[in-house]
Length: 46
Image (cartoon, rainbow, N blue to C red):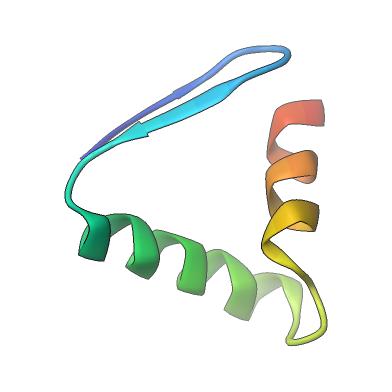
């Protein structure tokens, strides 16, 4: 799986199951009440 980050965008290339696993790992680190939109916003704004 490949991931690309820039100032205002991020892109993941891979199988759907790989992306789901990545997002679930991020969610575990961030906390149960965090939404996917919050995770994406944090990654793009870094």
